[in-house]
Length: 600
Image (cartoon, helix red, strand yellow):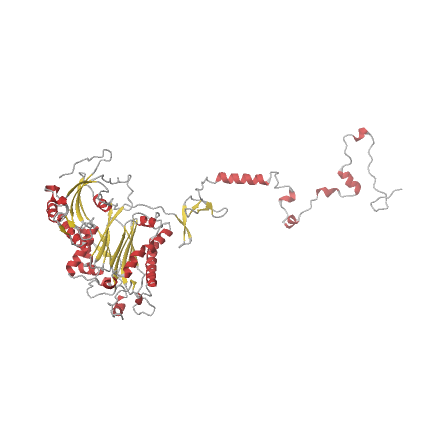
């Protein structure tokens, strides 16, 4: 007998028997599943029950898996679905080529960075950016624009003005390149002009004029250029003003630190003009007159003087607000017996910047921005003593009008007028000026809504050679100080030579155009060149001169003269040693010969 293992004493369930035989077994695989479960006493509905996972049990009923346990599984592999999704996104996105040398700042970011060029690139707009430290954000990289403004600058200083110094950087971008501070992002023209008038110095004892003025001449650009080179975005007016203020304050702090132990009490006033494109940023510290002149014949001061009013100051507008309260203190003599300090802002003057000083001076300049228009003729920096002696703004505007296109002659005329009025000039009296004139080559439209011209104006061609007549005056600083015409030694100073030439220029141009007869007469009387021995209209004739023959300064003057409609023009310029009246004839670029022979 046998026992059923199921644990029950009852007889085991009887399984259905199938007929035995090869034919009966053909095509059969055995009992069906439900027959086995039924024979074992298992519920038949067990096959339709689904056991839920923990995540499914936590979800609300009615989800798709209740009715369709296999919903969401199409049978396509997940890697293939992800690949198809990326292909669809790439097809929808525009094709952007990443510039060479740029790498993403971080994975998936829209910003790329070039270590070599120090600029960012953005994928969304394809533009270049730089990081603005001041605003703490990305700023568009600015591409320099060349404006149709041609500046010309000249300065003149009396020999006795030992404490007056100046700087005229005609191409600031070239200077930045030489100092490894690239400024290609600044608009053109780009220049820097500065005038320093020292005070409380002792030129006779030191032999170097004014220590503070000398220091400012050598170091102002070293403070300003790094700031201009650091940010390659567009320089707004407020940012330019801040850069000039910071440069002045840092320059003063460095001077005081270097000369704290030496006991130097020198100081100086300063005026600086930064020309960038069609904007002039004028900074004033002290009492140098800063004027803007208009083509209508008017002139106005851009900033007020930082000094107490003197007895000979007729215009009360020069007195700074609050100057009346400080003038009484400033009139007191200093303890070392030097002249009283009357400035409210200046470089140097260390004893008046101490914490316990009753005459507290500042080194923060006033900064004004002038947007050049067709009405502007130029700007001028004039030392205060000179400015008061010649008649102030009215005299400056008159000189501008009479010396249009000749800034050096205008600066000299201001000094000559002051010398004539003052008579005696001492080393404590600053007589110097810088004149900057702007030539806008094309007239601006009177309507701001007027459309731009269809074609750019044709550039003026530079002639291959010019025909010249000149008056030459030597001075004691020349390499050759012998007058070969009169066979004598030249002893005049450079200032005297320029004064004589300015008088000749005034006489030759007294009628508004060159008087050839007067020029011929003065050339025979004054010129120290052997060309003055020629006869007739050939007096002073140098013949045809090509560029590079007589030096760069000469070329800049002679080849910049404009020709008249007949292509043969008369013009005039003054140089440190000579006055040359230039007759210019254009040359054909193709044939290399003159298209018209000059008269005379």
